[in-house]
Length: 88
Image 1 (cartoon, helix red, strand yellow):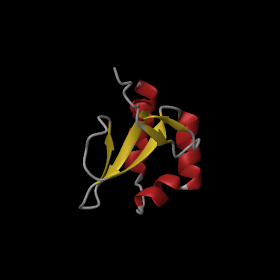
Image 2: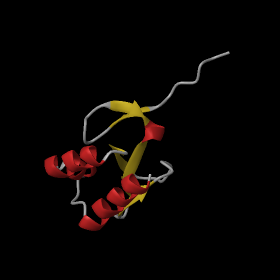
Image 3: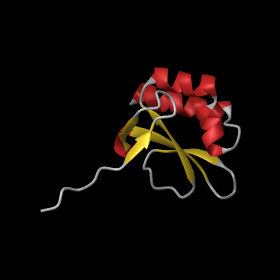
Image 4: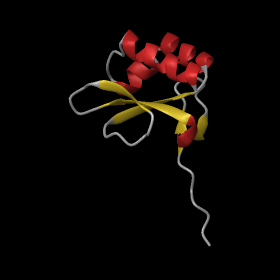
């Protein structure tokens, strides 16, 4: 029986490769609207972040999410991410 391959993605905070299921996805759809994608299934360009407040702070400080999504991420999205990380 074949072993199923686990998809890996890079966290925008710590820059470590981790399993996709362990990360939170921020997605920019075709209209340019940003949202937090907890399922990982929404269509569009995605950026990933660990479920760790320190990783989120690093990503905000270095503006890596902005660069990956090629747009400015609003404070509302960052607040939503912080809430998701705190509430688990």
